[in-house]
Length: 74
Image (cartoon, rainbow, N blue to C red; front, top):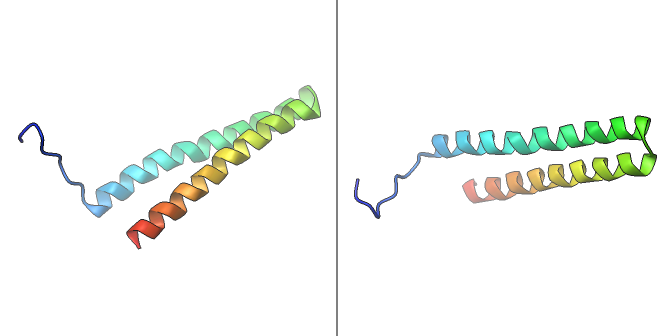
């Protein structure tokens, strides 16, 4: 393959890569929210709430990426 040429992926390959990447966002958001619940019980409510909000923002970002990708494929 020449230096400037890029390999094109099939739709199935793109979908599999997207699943792998977005799955990490989902796990990260869930772990942050679970850590926030732990902090609420062991520390202050405000500290736990900050972690829960951070996890929620990541999950919202996850949702936006999925909708954006769905609209492009559609």
